[in-house]
Length: 145
Length: 388
Ligand SMILES: Cc1ncc(COP(=O)(O)O)c(C=O)c1O
Image (cartoon, rainbow over all chains, first blue to last red; front, top):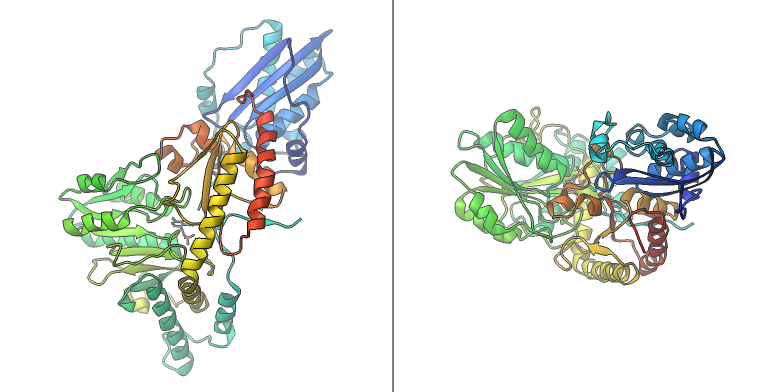
């Protein structure tokens, strides 16, 4: 069900970990929904010098986090702000429809980290509600017959 | 890489002896069992023999009480809708549990939403047990059916069915049990269990997929399910799937012969796996009762990580398992069974089910015990909610 690219990033995730004294941190999701992504950035000369992530979630959540860090590392803040969840999914050669929404939030986590760096208040959104607000894809409960 | 299959709860490989028994019924004994001629009679005899074997496996003394179906799902649908239709004049209340398989739950929901029935979904305790007293208290004048599963497919807890059956009998309420996970793996006797109806499915005990049976005690009021020809004593029309039925019969015969030995062997492997996981991995919780559980069932919640990613890592190592995670919020809720047992969403997302069966070996258990701790450690190292 997953592309080779997703599997590659799942098996060998890039930039896993935390950054000490980061310039920005962003978190999306919650454990109740089964996905949490946390991004740390270090900024130098308006460029993302270093980026790391930690993710609790399914294969798609881990792969989208990993490729997001790979895409934006070394990019300017402005360029990184342009990255969309859709573009992340495309960079992975697509995701199964059921994974397009809640497991594909890595760009959102990145934007939150950038806002944190820029001193822009991240909206006090209740992540759970934000999740519910998505147009939900097809069901993906893993059935135990 | 040598693959390891630990998903016997989902389905099982068909026993070689079963395949051999089925083979002639595709193109040697191919008559229609309803036909008058010798071709038909031979096929009919094969069905009768299979019915006998299945009846013996579950202690049904009257062979005619057994109706072949297309599997566990149809047997559940037939039992519940068939009794509901037969008795709706008498009352429209059904009692079930909150941990049933979807084949039962969704059928009850259908009766509730489309046919005006009222359904009580009984809670379970933290081990997954239904309290028989709750069943007793839920019975009212309108109650026409109680349906409670014998053993749960996710976490393996075996319900006090005989006791609940006694209550149903005393109250004069028809009692059905979904025994799909139990038949062939633990001793099942319809008289000892006090059940009127019982569902079973061949593919859970090394028989073919797409065939099962519904046991219906003589005298139980039930409407027919498929209208058409007069097969199955006019209760389920359609030309019988003879090879599959023969396969079910053979699987039942083998299961009966090997039941006690196999069960003991599996319990040893199961407990080795359970104890090993508890020893080698911290922050884990065994789901389901420790001993009153299916002989091959192991189900753990592994904290701070999510089920699908555990399955993917295991799959990359060639190990097949299951999880009750809802791996996206396309459906936000993880397993309804684990939630009913009081687990939080977060912990239910991290559940892992390993189900052992006929061909698993101790080496395979050792291999899983060697690989799983590393997989868990890798995923936890990546988890923002794990601080160690
Ligand atoms: C408890 C239970 N009931 C019913 C079913 C459905 O059986 P089948 O797949 O034969 O339709 C299953 C398994 O799939 C099950 O585990």
